[in-house]
Length: 244
Image 1 (cartoon, rainbow, N blue to C red):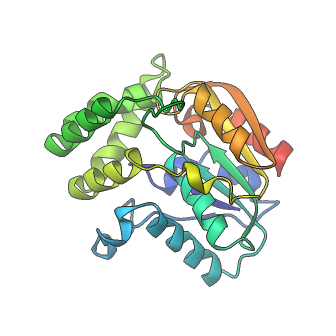
Image 2 (cartoon, one colour):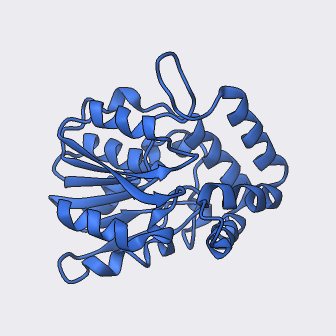
């Protein structure tokens, strides 16, 4: 079972979920290049100019470890990275668990992504101009669960440890991505875990994915915010168990 983290995070974000599966699966955790304890000198701005560069890394990890028919668990942007990797190497995974995924964050004709183009541009400019200020402002909103401020503080701290230049680049790649056309090629069974109130991936996005991912199952959780792996790990584990 391979766990992949979202933007501004690292593998530590799975510490409350991954151990629940260690007796049933060999669990694999890693940091995307540019995140966590990865080698920052390996960050290639051309390779990572779209999500397929990260998908190539995921396939490389799978090949290096000799994985076949594994379960992939991806949070946020890593959900689409997992879909792209599965399309590149169909033998690698037999099931995908997508936690708060989105194929496109910007609204389009007939599509609700959650953000207007100008909103995304303003967020990206804010991040590029003031990394620490952006982290302190956005992390609590992304995390939700305002009654537990320590969760937002942890996410903000994670954002702040990311190299500002890399963070700005990865954020632009993430929030301007459009992987809607890649969904039809993915025929691997998928579990879409959607939070009931998530400013990054609204409910309409979950419905869209379920309609376009063949054989997918949508589970709307009681959890709120964009990081249920931290805010509601027991609910995530329960939903995953019934699927894997």
